[in-house]
Amino acid sequence: MFNHRQFLKVAGMVAGVLFAWPIRWVKAKPLGLKLDKVEKLKNVGRWAILKIKIKKKPVLFIRTSEDTIRALDPTCPHKKCQVQYNEKINQIVCPCHKSRFNPDGKYLDGPAKKDLTAYKAYLRKNMIVIDLDKDH
Ligand code: FES
Image (cartoon, rainbow, N blue to C red; front, top):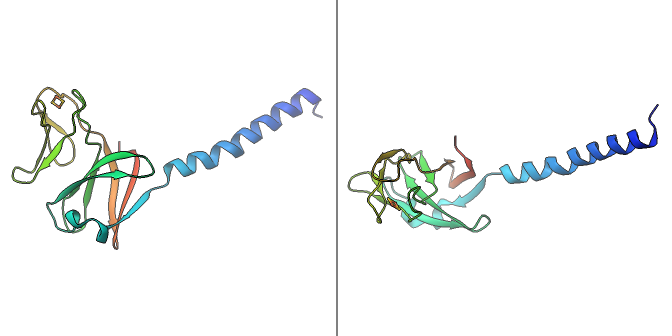
């Protein structure tokens, strides 16, 4: 049947699958933030940049409607300044060299030339649920 070398090879592959699978699952687990705790995001059209404790990443949230929220990496693709949402013009603007993006993070104009990284995010009951794996 199996010789010693074949047995070790198969056992190594099984152990690899068993140990790797939970790590991938944990990485993909979405995070929840209580909407009550974030005053700025209670109303449509408002925004906030929050640091997600587990990932230690800033995330730009924009409340786009009663039922929807956008979550983006606020790091400008040009020279890494932190972008901000401008409620008056409904666009995201980089303060350094004026690149502009729509609320979905799509590039509009300026030197950035690339979209912002978008994350999957949605509202469920009183929670903002965000998955820091990329949206696309
Ligand atoms: S760093 Fe944002 S446009 Fe240059």
